[in-house]
Length: 310
Image 1 (cartoon, rainbow, N blue to C red):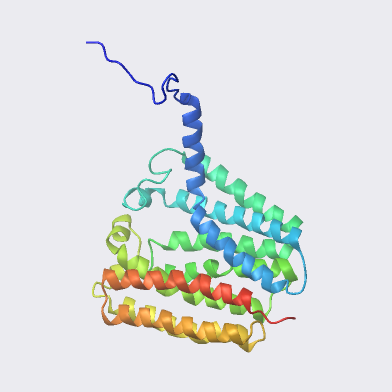
Image 2 (cartoon, one colour):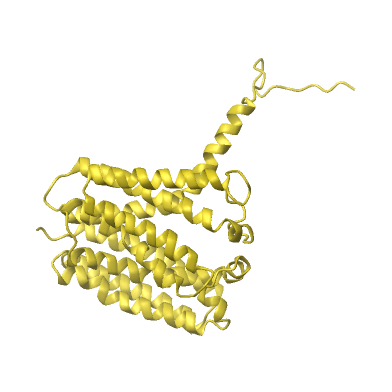
């Protein structure tokens, strides 16, 4: 029996993309996925905040652009190396089993070369386009994330505390690029991000506790079946974040509008963490996660809206 195929548009036959082009697109998508674009985007938001605060009353548009490009490449390289080191554990987890390395879309050798090229290229751009201090902080961030935090994940639940250090350094990169030094102002930005991460990641770790255990990661919820310790730590760090969030106003980095907004945001985040502590379950963990996602861009926005002049 003869089968007729009707074209999508009358008179115009359907043309498929050449297999080589499809393959190239799939390869490109795989390499982009290795860089964790969403994480890189959030890193650049914090870098931009640090730079713009450091460059108050000054204009450094070229340096700003090079700082974002350089840091973005270093962050992308760190993500590639993270996935290279965790490729076997990723293969055992539902949420990461489809990543490029576990599925064989990118080889381990290709990942190492790609990640190293990105990181070295990004650091070089920071040296030439900003300054050596910014490049040094970026290099430290890369080393701590890749060679300290990542190897500790299957060994100790303290990996979250260690990982919070490189996670809090991006605004310091931005500040260093704009000012050429690191002071109390950069530390205040670091402290906010450092403390913010604990409730955020504890919520994620609780939601995906079984998957993390399947992958061999030592996360606190895996050693705390009832969740009391996980909830208490989330609430403790959220409480500590309230005075830390006010520090920029105390040291003259931000004004009264920021102070009021940071106070409200701090209590909002704390309320979500306390709710999670008093009733540890997936629903409250997701509410805490949403609160963390609201808190960070809101407080960074307040810093940019209400900075005090130098």
